[in-house]
Image 1: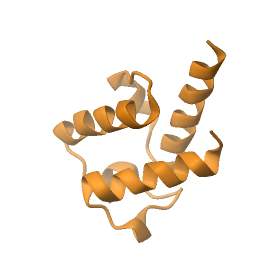
Image 2: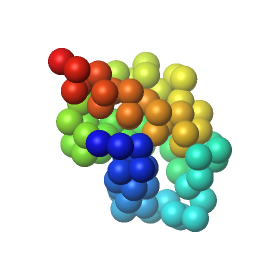
Image 3: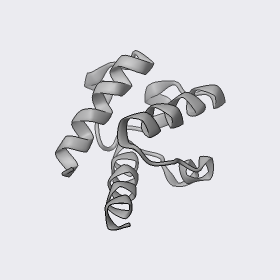
Image 4: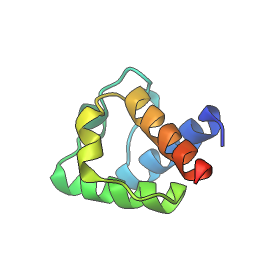
Length: 85
């Protein structure tokens, strides 16, 4: 799966699951502020990621994710790790 496919899938489920404005989802935008996430929303986000991309997410992984670009990079790295196993 290439980066563009990851971005397309990710943006689609963020708009669907979190009722986000697709126009505000840009690589440099702040993930938490744009999606108005609270702690329960992060749990929902973990479940959606696991269902869409097939890997387990550790909650502490989100500590380093501030922007959508960080998020896309995280998903791409985890998919790459999964494919190497």
